[in-house]
Amino acid sequence: MNIVFDFGGVLFHWHPPTFLARVWPHRVRNAQEAEAVAREFFQAYTGDWGAFDQGLADADETAGRIAERTGWPLAEVQQVMAEVPEELQAVPQTVALLLDLKAAGHRLHYLSNMPQPYADHLERAYPLQEWFVSGVFSSRVKQSKPQQPIFDEALRRIGAPAAECLFLDDHPANVEAARALGWQAELFTSADALRPLLRARGLLGG
Image (cartoon, rainbow, N blue to C red; front, side, top):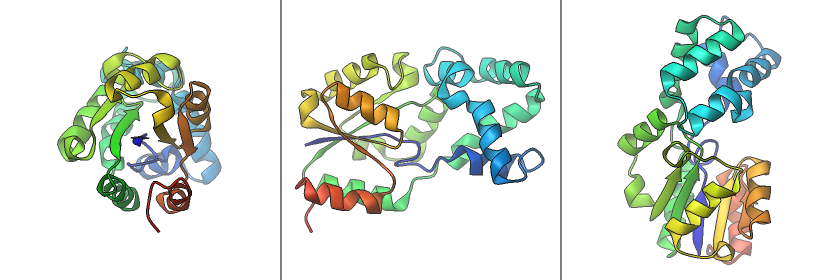
């Protein structure tokens, strides 16, 4: 089986409200504020951040657009963006699952909405070429999930039909888009929750 991992929120830790509470304590004082500031900053990965994800704007352009749109000081916006790589730490339980799937003989791939600077960081910090047979970063193909073109590009690199690919993502819209295109897909909540689903599919031993 070809098993395709999302990155943020799946293989790498990513939770914008807690991230912003850590780096912007003066703006985020409680959970409600954290959710609101995250929505404003990342725009559900559309708008300014969506263009950054797709490689249509660089970090400086993106910071300037966010600052202009929100009124937040440019230096503070730049600070948040500079802290993102530190937030993208590998989740040990997901790494263990990934290695178990690899040991079971499955071909592993990734499909990630990821701005160019953070994609570069992950390639330097982690053995992606050892873990994965192929992968797609949104910023390098100028497309992003949940749109069809990036799924088509992933299939081209995987070299298999959609029905032979299992996609793991933490965003329901991406999972639904994959299923609509004929992929097998599971909504990722945690590695521990996913293991029994993979065993039920016959992809992992007991």
